[in-house]
Amino acid sequence: MKPSRPFEVFRAAALAVVVFSLVAPLLWMVAASFKTNVDIYDTGKAFAFSPTLDNYDTVLQQANYVQFIGNSLWVALAATVFSLVLGVPAAYSMSRFNMKKSALVVLMARVIPGVSLLVPWYYVFSNLQMVGGYTVLILSHMFVSLPLIVYIMMSYFDGLPTELEEAALVDGLTHIGAFRRITLPLSVPGVATAGILSFIFSWNNFMFALVLSGADTKTLPVAIFDFVGYASIDWGGLMAAATVVTLPIMLITLFVQKYIVSGLTAGATKG
Image (tube, rainbow, N blue to C red; front, top):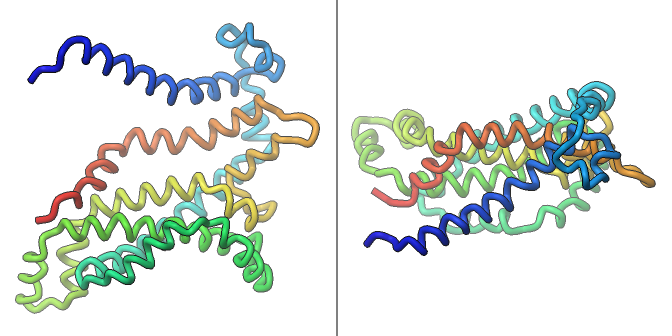
């Protein structure tokens, strides 16, 4: 049955409201990054203003944000790669051998608030003299990435037919060989989806890096707070830094969104 015209108008209006509510803050952030602090406070120059690149000059040159970009990139990539290496085989084992209790433990790791672990982690890693290094940041980000990857890949493996693996076992392959030669190549879309989402979560992670990073290992979400002072806030620099943090993730999501959707829905049906 074809939808009525009033319903189509209502749907279009509702979509427009939702899109505007999501896009408007981003547009304001980008526009404010090209304004001086005086223009940001001036409501009369919300749309008509003289753009300046001083904020980006402060972020990329004076504030040494290139180093922080490198820190975020290294920590996110390392946490994602290590989580994939550990999480994909673990998800396969839980899926194929019906390890329900282990899956429940992984789910609990997703539910536990990360802030509840910050104090014991800081105590342990400080005694090991690891606070402020890249290793502790990578390990803490893996706490978020690893359960996410296992959770996604379990659903993906559940959706793959077992007949191909059974045929490989009949031909003489071991379970590991069947996984490596048959299942893993078929699960590339799911691995890509899990890796992309893991990288995004790690890139945006603020809480762990705030407590466990050092002056030379700060990531971008933490470095943004350099523009927040005790007496004043450099809104122009803050918005430029926020744009630098957000833009790479937005571009990644824009170009790979179809792979993310296909990977998340591939395990929705079994067989």
